[in-house]
Amino acid sequence: MPNQPFRQNLVTDRTKTIHYAIRDVVVAAKRLEASGKRITYLNIGDPIVYDFTTPSFLIDAFCAAAKEGHNGYSASDGIPAFREAVVDKEQRINHVSINASDVIATAGISEGIQMIMAALVHPGSQVLMPGPTYPPYLAFVRFFEGTPVTYHCVEESGWQPDIDDIRNKISDKTVALLLINPNNPTGSVYSEKVVKSIIDLAGEYGLPLISDEVYDRLVFDQAPKSTAALAKDVPVIGFNGLSKVYLVPGWRIGYMYFHHPNNQLNDLKEHILKQARIRICTNAPAQYAAAVALRESDTYLQDVITRLRQRRDIVYKRLNEINGISTSKPEGAFYIFPSIDLQGRWKTDEAFVMELLTETGVLVVHGSGFDPNYGAKHFRLVFLAPPSTLNSALDEIQIFVEKRS
Image (cartoon, rainbow, N blue to C red; front, side):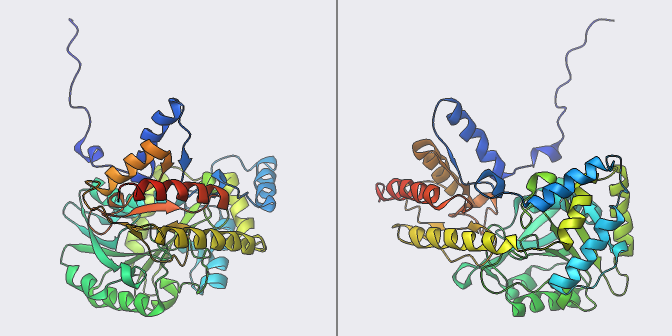
């Protein structure tokens, strides 16, 4: 049989919709780095890249788990010790009452996002989410042929959600309402009043809430109120994990839980468990270590927050001193989301970011990558780096911007 021409158009349309600005910008940075340019990476929220280290008790627990032989498959929903530790942590820290049977271990929150959207989103479905938002929420809704609908978060009010805008955007196609609190990319912490108002809307329209709380303990002043703790009988799917607070992003250990006093989410949970079974399980030794971490002393955390607060204050002050840049003060996480007065100097925020990278070697992420509407004319900067690195990068940004004024 003669050779046939290689088949074209093998790639599906759904994969063509995938964009992840936080890592997409690295492609250009690596090309520049290969040519000899020094790059200052302020794009990815990985504490280990900078001068933060994983607590030794966590490393010891991981090594002990491996040495004790916990290297095989685990249960698809997670080992009992981990799920029970999640129950204890959520009750102790966030005042959320759940059962271990309502907890599913995930490979970081990202896998949880994929699973929940696969189970919830039909072609044409809409998911309401904060604008701007963490990009995988946008990407996975589109991947499953739904439409992400971003609601207005008011920059002048510290990026608090606009409740009236949420109400106006709920439709018969809406299948879920998302909160990210503390928020990525803005660093905002939603007030208890705002969270309660969103819960009331969800209850009024019969919608499940998805509440991403992975930065729950990385706050500088007022701790956020967990959505499930306030929700009463409104069903909540909670997302959390160890990557940020416990300084182990590479372990890929997260979890989702179902807070549904009237068992409204049983069917949804079962279909997510089917996905958990087909992907086998998450990292078993890391689950054993995570079970220890969630119950262990958190004395290391105060030093982490003290250092982050100092770095937050540096970037907040210095960015607001640059002509053409302004920003609100983050209350949590380790991101700041300044606005840029483009003034015809740059066509878009992405053009600003790429030119800044090419000229100075400082890598940040364009705001439109977090939402083409409410993220436009902004950029996200990660303030995990040491003060000396941050100040040097801010010097470069200031020179870059002001010479175009």
